[in-house]
Length: 104
Image 1 (tube, one colour):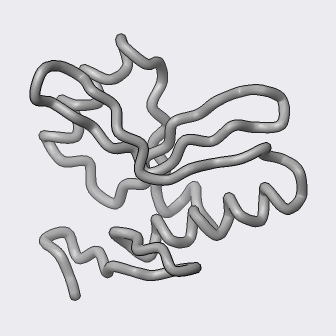
Image 2: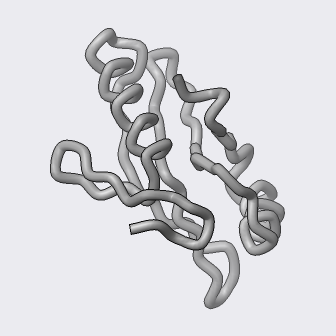
Image 3: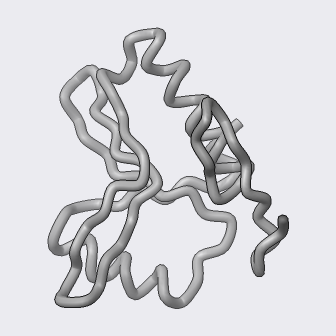
């Protein structure tokens, strides 16, 4: 089923993803973990930005060198997302935005 921004919900390993692109990133993370480049990762992590305002990241990744990244896979950056990103970063740090050109 297509959504407003033409994303197609996709299932991989019994998990449902909002788009094919997000599912592709999941597959990449699984491979990176197999090769030891990341320790672990998780999907759909909630972050509370203010009372009544929640942002859910696509992925939280713990890399082998100890870095932690919060990732959001985007085809389109909506106005609501841009506001949440501005609220997110002072509280939690950099939010990494991945687009189709970042995910092969």
